[in-house]
Length: 189
Image 1 (cartoon, helix red, strand yellow):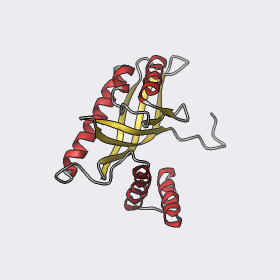
Image 2 (image 1 turned 45 degrees about the vertical axis):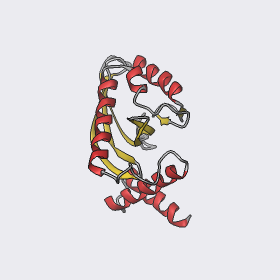
Image 3 (image 1 turned 135 degrees about the vertical axis):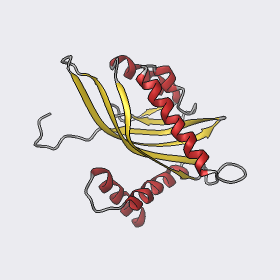
Image 4 (image 1 turned 90 degrees about the vertical axis):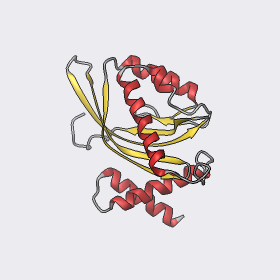
């Protein structure tokens, strides 16, 4: 448990930009967290039958991310929801809600997001993928451009971590977490 907690602290340090970590620490930390997901039964320990083709898995995960960007940028909440595993175990942690569980609820949430932010566009500014068991863990940063409440253009910078795998013949999100850093306590909101 001590090793796991150390890994979590170092991973959080990386996410928070504290500087006393390495890229390998981040990969190990996220791998440990993905291992915990594996213990939950979402991710299998072994790769696809016949061995793991990591390059093909990463390519499939990147293609899924591209579909996500296309669906989000077109404002299609239904297409977004279709990218998630059709299971009550799928979970999304969007920036504006603690958690959304199950594909049906994710569908409701993605439709509401699309309706609330017409014309919003998102792009990945940094993206990393690596294989853990039969899944791919992705993490990185994004930029969202939209019209603010005052009618002026605005930009939101955020970060994401997700777990993707092939389920029922298609690559889907099993866990999706996006967040936006909080402003410093002395910064105006």
